[in-house]
Length: 384
Image (cartoon, rainbow, N blue to C red; front, side):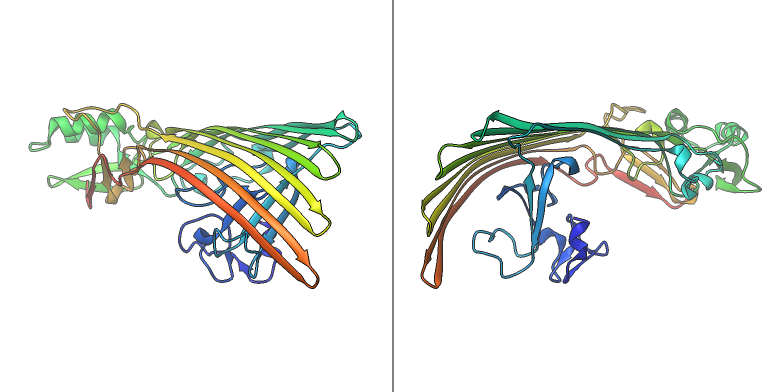
């Protein structure tokens, strides 16, 4: 995707509209088409690739922008196609690691705003290996790549978050008209500020309640596994069979639109892509490509059991004067199950000065998704 920005007519979307990848030919990223060796690799929910390929397993990457051949008729934007590495008559292997950690970086400005002046945790390793060679010389070849990418880091709110100090909480407990149930709910989820921030207060029932900055830092991690396996078999001088299998597994924690680490949410992601292709040469001027593929993507974004104060589900509570939000991501829970079945056949016939193409592309998609915005409810208050 980054390499495509080097092409003419390709530019960053500038954050306009959703989707993955750049704007190709002035179109939105949602119009891009992602393929792996000519088979469908599109995420049906928010577009983008459904299965990711390790850089070390990529043999070739191509982008077609316009006037592309008829078999690339799925989308009107960029046609992104990735080819995987294959084996050869010689045995080749590799081991690699990409490494970053907190000692190599400056302190992020978002942590400085929280009063944190030393680097919190950031450790990222991308470790993997590959092996390719002959199963039968000149006949059958294999290649495999496996990669593990653990990332451990700390997350914080992009701006300062405020909460009452211990003195402020004691004052709230003595005020008439303050709901004890609501206050108990607040104390259950929000820590007490260590000290008042200057003379900053918030007014409740006519009383000034001292507030201070919360040092909200919580864990944020991602453990990702990527695997790619290829097999190429030469049946004869006219026939070749190719088999491909890709697997992605990721366990992460969501910190987006969440202020308090208590509400960071685990996210589970799994993806598979398997394809079988047969290439046949009838004559030097008549060739045929056949492909069958299956892709599956599973994504779960749950919320924890935050029932409290007589509520079976905790809604999100936002206090604008404190820049404070109680609750997990307002769009959670959500999840999806996507299955794609595909049959493709392309025949190319060259006759004199003319080239004719005939083909078929059939796809069956089963997409089961659950997403309801603010399904748990959301309450926004200008003042505490």
